Amino acid sequence: MQVEIGDWQVDLIVDDDGHLTVEINHADGSKVHQLEVDVTANDTEWAERFSTECVERAYIDSQKCTDDFSDLLPVTD
Image 1 (spheres, rainbow, N blue to C red):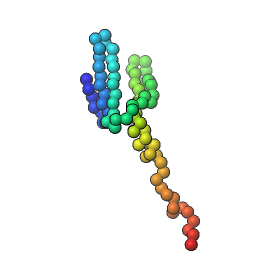
Image 2: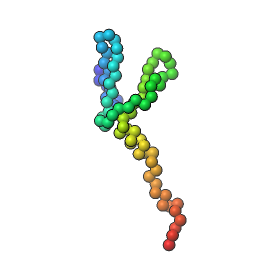
Image 3: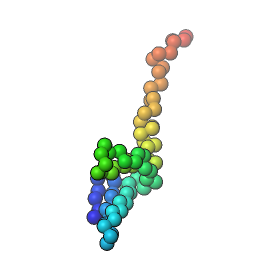
Image 4: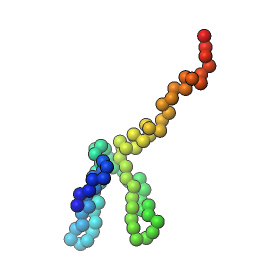
């Protein structure tokens, strides 16, 4: 089964023995990274967080200060 969520493409595959394989790709084409493992609060579920190099780079860039602070500098003649 293939599922698309936002820019993520997730392939869910169950083999003949009942094992689940989860394949994850992102539309940005950069490498997928696992951020956190087993982020659930109970013993019957499993969850992981994923990101990509491009997603992380965009987040870091969005957190950078874009102000030049020129209005705070003393006026010189």
